[in-house]
Amino acid sequence: MISNEQLLMQIDKHLKYAKTSGNEQSFRESLVAIKALCDVGLEVQIPLQVTTTRSVQTTSTILPTQPVAIKEEDANGDSLFDF
Image (tube, rainbow, N blue to C red):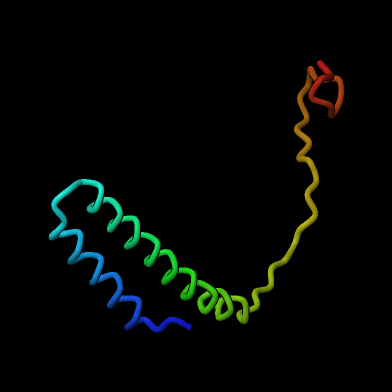
């Protein structure tokens, strides 16, 4: 497993390289590497958060859904197409 310290050291290394690079291509490559390292760090952190939120159970009451009948004097029935 990659530690947070190792991850941050690699990001810092690529950031320093991006700051000192003389051309656009090297700069962009460093940014891509930083982005990839950030994605790895987030993937490592997300499963820890998901497992802790899954342990909390919530209960909810499910009510049956029935259409609300609106009675109008000039309507022929309950259907939307009854005029």
